[in-house]
Image 1 (spheres, helix red, strand yellow):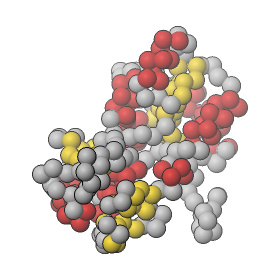
Image 2: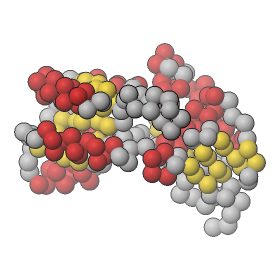
Image 3: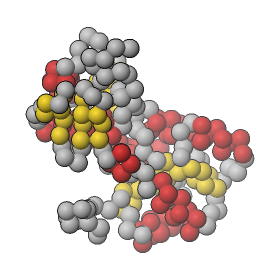
Image 4: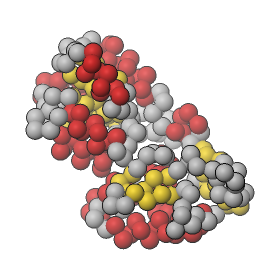
Length: 245
């Protein structure tokens, strides 16, 4: 197992394979596991979306030709709350199909049958930039709000603020998917556990406390935005609080 800078072991990268063909899943499971990846498997759209929401894979391999619900619909739903890299697997070699799928949010498109070494190279390429911590240090500082995930530090106008474990967990999840909507269900499952997926009042309380500590006006928030009936989004695109537009 790999180790981080402190010498502590790091968990294997988690890859979710969503494909209705058992032989393809077995082939990918063996191939990816041989490279040190942890592999999750789903044979249909519903199971795949459930694992994507509850197990936080760092890469998804998605077949377009799923039974019942097409892979394009699965990609659309995943993109509504997650920026996780997605590699499409498909027997459809039509160029227009590839363009439509990539425009819809896929990161790569592999046509079946495919060569294993090329596929693994594509996986490695996508995973090199998979997490904000790897390409920007997991850090945000706009002069008003500073978030430093590796150090677990948050500061407002240079003054550190203390967050509870749940408050930091929600802020971290929003930061990892910043400028994208994170569903209430996803936040609740990841931070409170799958048995609390419907306890939205927990989340409302934590978000209210976070806004108060960040100085974010709940009637006109700048950072933690509410998507009614869906979830929340951490905005890093708008001017920082206290600045002029």
